[in-house]
Image 1 (cartoon, rainbow, N blue to C red):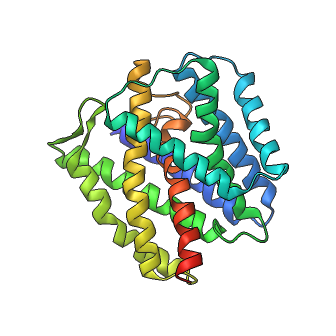
Image 2 (tube, rainbow, N blue to C red):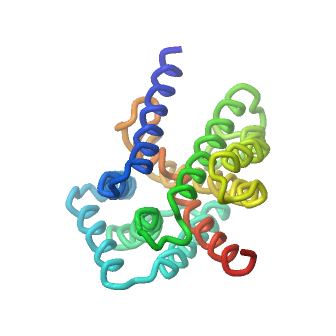
Image 3 (tube, rainbow, N blue to C red):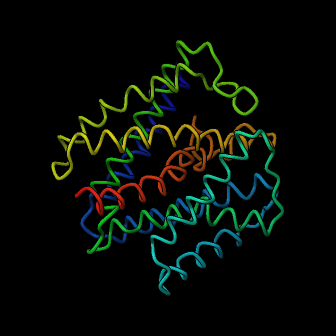
Length: 267
């Protein structure tokens, strides 16, 4: 009971920080939060591959920001991140252990974590057309809602392992429950964010739910290769920040590019 209470309390605080950062009028808080979370997650990921430097993730963050400031288009960022996430998923489904040396681990870190987090920064740009504040909030609600449903339903009723060699604690029942819960979150989003229809949110929800499950498995593969249970211990009951962000960072480029196509060909 204490573990459940601690996990729930930390989860609420974590969600509250995100929501406050997005809704606050000044963009500085949001941008600092995104950069800070990106730095911590990058550090935790690199540690899984025996890269212990605290300076390296900071340098990688600066390089990522520098690329954007010097004109790297966000669509290029999204395409590179999509390629990386898809490649990691293929390796995971092929049950190929991912062992990276420091240089390659740094490159993967940029594409897998920092580029997706960079895409979130569009929410504070006045001319943002893809990741508006409403879209970011709606996406977070999908990630939190479906993750919570997969965890709770899987814990109570899960009997069939989703991918035993990667994450024996995740169940098929939990994954199906997460997907079936997407329409409920889509309905809530359609009432909260009136600029977007229920059908739009339903499509985003099904995409986000599917990719978030895969992203969770990819990170589990990293941890299994490193022979650790969690990427860190910064969040009581949840492990590391990378453990909380894994689904989100994997999902971001898929949703970003889908919305871009939706905007061009449907709207």
